[in-house]
Image (cartoon, rainbow, N blue to C red; front, side, top):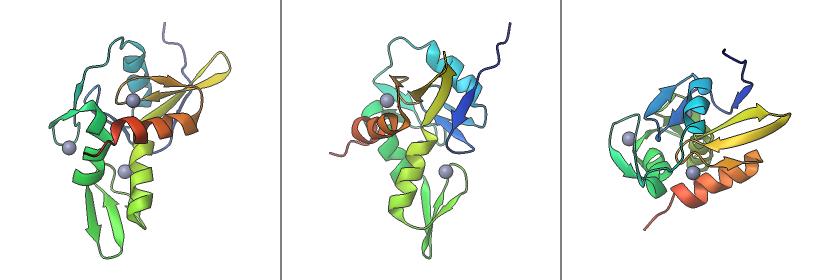
Length: 135
Ligand SMILES: [Zn+2]
Ligand SMILES: [Zn+2]
Ligand SMILES: [Zn+2]
């Protein structure tokens, strides 16, 4: 019964606060997201287990899960080293989206709330605007 899903991820590791998952299995994340009907207001950080408001989930990852060493910013979620904080923040957003090919079209999912988007650009903007909300 397992149909071959065509999945696209932007980073090796996929982070899904909605599912509480961090790992390389993007197909598992997509399958889960497709089953979500009403996303909760609170999600769980898969890295440290802390409960976080959905609208601040990306902000949590950006502020809590980086290490600055010299001129590099190290992503705690996957170990990648980025050249600047700006690049790191963009990189974290890329952990939070997955694409799936459906009827010849790429559909993009936000792994924090499970919403679907028709372009990679729009899902990345959504993560920034809806899940990186500062006070
Ligand atoms: Zn955390
Ligand atoms: Zn990373
Ligand atoms: Zn979302």
